[in-house]
Image (cartoon, rainbow, N blue to C red):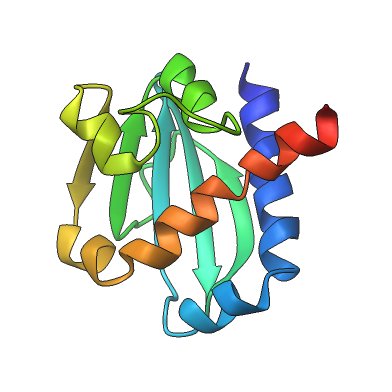
Length: 130
C-alpha cells in the first residue's frame, strides 16, 4: 500500500546517498518530480542529485518539473530484482500502457539515465528482504 511505497522511496534515498556514481551523474539535477502510483502522489525533491525531501500529496502548491504516473502493481513489478519485459524500464511501462510521463519531458530525457537508475535502486531492497 501507500506506506510501502513511501518506505521504498526512503530506501531509495538512503541507497542514493551510498551510490557515488549516481550522485555524480545527478549533480546538476535539482528538481521536484511527481510520482503518482494508482492515484497516490509522491513528490521527490532532488538537490544536486540527492533526494532531500519526500512528501505525500495531493498538493496543488507543490510545483514539479515532470511526473511519472503508473499503477501500484506495475511499480511492484518494475521494482522486482528481475522484472519482466516491459516492466524493466519507465519507458517500457509507457509502451505497454502502464505508465505515463507528463510535464517537462525534455528535463526527464536530459536526466534519463540518472532518474532511471535512481528508481531501480529499489531493486536492491528485494535482495535485502530475501
